[in-house]
Figure 1 (tube, rainbow, N blue to C red):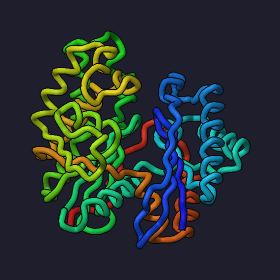
Figure 2 (figure 1 turned 180 degrees about the vertical axis):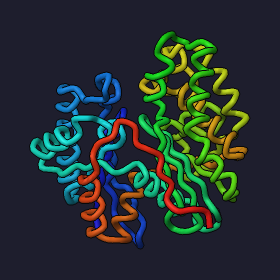
Figure 3 (figure 1 turned 60 degrees about the vertical axis):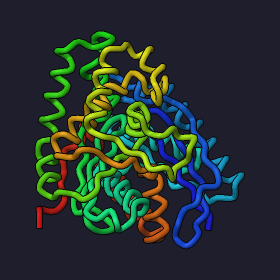
Length: 335
């Protein structure tokens, strides 16, 4: 069976086409389109017409690529940059009209659950009680569980791009006061979730997303060209040093550092502060970097639970009104 998934994130639209063998999605083709949608939103989060048109063209190209590789219509979803937009329904309508592909937005907690599933499958049961963190452009997703799916999941408005716009855009590089305000905001938002993680005492912590991957490379992890099976770790103490390094440089010069790409250079500092603060508050000395994330989670859930699951989850997502700042939701009290 061949399947495909399209993910419209804050910076990039990504396509993964995979063959399923013994329940494992094996990539046969990947593609990406750099749109930087997060840089084309209004003060209230509304996506500009030009940004929507670029999104339509990218999704259409992804659909054409999937067809060329004989994959069914992609499972298509957009993350926080579209989910939180006041004109979300109009964006999704224009994508469907212009491409024939029905794109949806998933609740932040569902995204956290899917990322957790991907990390669980990658790391295996040997990981034991598992905490997973994922930094996107608009949100920080956190999940913890002992089984296939998490016992609780939370989506916090602590995305690297969001915080950069709110706290670090006044001067480049930012001053000490801006960094203090940023840390104060992160500690406030993380208080309840961090307490839960400390109480659960996970055996393994994992981080995913391009932000964490680039920060891990900056902190000395193996480069991506060595492949996904090389073990990569991100330690709290190294991340603290990375915050100091990034804070001392303007965004343009951060792009010269190992692992930091030019499109993400501006938001790398906010991502590092979020990552370091989260690990510290949760009592985690470090985490393993997981190459699988939400796209693989969608593929795995589709493979394991069938097309009815996707129909159900997308139908439920359409019934949820847009929210610029998704509220914290923790599913399930401590046992």
